[in-house]
Amino acid sequence: MAGAVVGCPGCGAGVTTEPADAGAAVACWRCGEVVLVPAAEPVTVPVVRRGVRRRRRDRDEDDDEPRREPVSAVAVVSLVLGVVSCVLFCVWPLTLITSVAGIVGGALGRNTASRKLAVTGLVLSATGLIFAVGFLVLTVAGVSLIDFKGGPKVPPPFFPANP
Image (tube, rainbow, N blue to C red):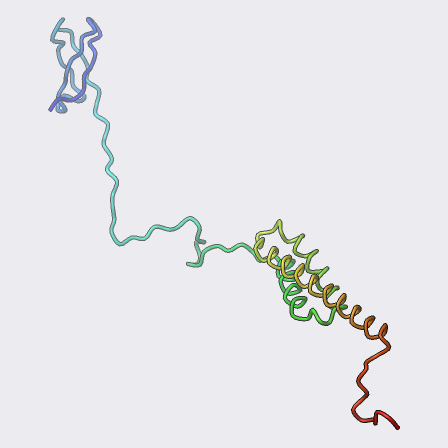
């Protein structure tokens, strides 16, 4: 097996060397001048060790748990207020307050690491606000309808219809 090809300084011809000639001097085949063969660089072979686990870059050195981003308090508050506003939509004064606060918190929390929580709180708060406004409109319309027609037509059950 041939080693490296070294150029002759006298005639410029290529001198083929063997691996055993590394670091020695050889004669040029064309002009006979002495050509110095450079020493071979050591070849490094990677060592493969079985059973050794590599450290993952996303883990901390002290524990085996992956690094987690901190949860945004604004996003969590928005989510909680959104759930409260959807559950208690019949109590519309409370729902109006919690829905508006949840929408503001969700809008502020969209630029944090807890973006999904903030968007979920924003959607739930908007849904609770729509339910509360709908319930308010139906309540006012029902009360107005009863008042417009002169009250209920059915007499109360504990009093006789005609005295």
